[in-house]
Image (cartoon, rainbow, N blue to C red; front, side):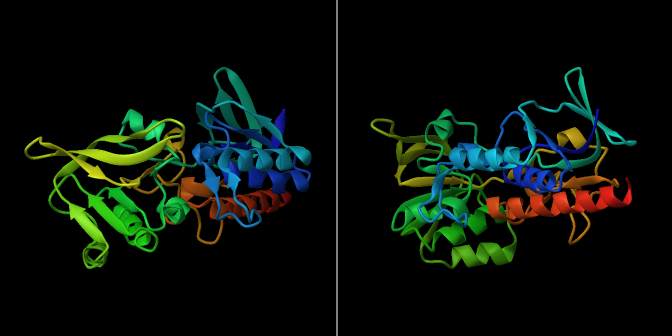
Length: 310
């Protein structure tokens, strides 16, 4: 069977694309991937998505997205694509030995925050440990937080957090930053920011009962190896994001960090009939609302493309 629209990946972009494609009677199929719902499934409270004045839990929100797409005829399959062939139409994607064929593809595999690799990041994830200041900074009003990193992402996170937190520590493993000078200057000139150079987070500490709560981090001096504790309420890991685009290397055009390239103002990739939506092609905003918006765009782009290439 050749599908009209095959959506690889889920999350706000994939499910919104599915919703619009389904309402256009295109009977889309979503191969939801190994983390159905995307990054929001590991997010606790979402308070910045329009339409939820009291906030909503990330996993619940993604379940609502999924149900709405299914209501109009989307088929959601909880499988992970491990091979694709976009060299000719119909396009093909494989889950193990099983092959799916489609006339158009929407890639919405997202991006994943890079983590330090500590078990405590998992323990306190969503409870004091975050990789998105724009998403979670509001919860730390008047609190003491730390940002870990030394690039532009870390500077942006630290600068944003000063709007909410009473103090922001910027923890960097070296003695100089790789971020742009203008970003560094902005942060260093902010009285709320204190930089801790030549330090790495060795462990994130806190209570786990009756609920997880961060209380401090253990720092390791990268020069002397000396350990020290720093009291705080939250930790923001800002060492970058990795787009989940390995599957498309050598097939779809991408930038040097792996974000898929689309034609300006559209979701069209370099291959006719293949579209990209959400964080897989967005290194700037990385928000649920912008991902959903681009999912809508991708579905409309796919519908229009199909109408001209039927």
